[in-house]
Image (cartoon, rainbow, N blue to C red; front, side, top):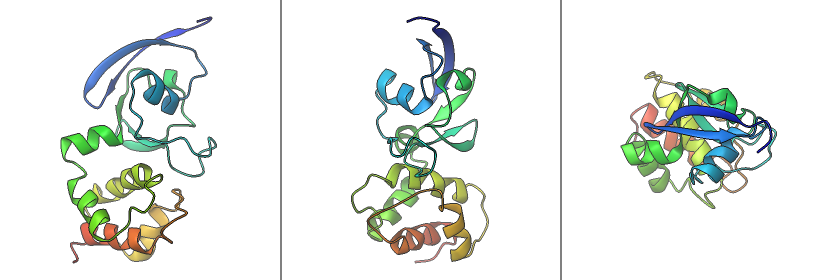
Length: 157
């Protein structure tokens, strides 16, 4: 690998070190190097939100961040948040409200929803829509997704 760089990051609580090409995107690194395929590759322009992950506590688009930029960072993926139980309530709500549909957008949508939940404040349906506006869904029309998020964030249902 010409001009490869050594990086070390913590992914879902596990420290990993790899040699990567400088132009490898974080989502490609996660999927191809680590086998974490929950974050999807959609538009590759940061528009659809399918590649959403959490880096040092903030949600980011994995297709817009290079793996070398994550050197020294903590990265949480949908797999880590699901396995830890952090997403249990929102996953259950998505299931009950039929907010899943084809599932392609679901990991990124759950990551965005969890970011809102972590703020620990009541929100309006408009604020929920605004918060998930960077995540595209072609199946649901968003109504069920907003219902599911509202149920968990505001304790409804």
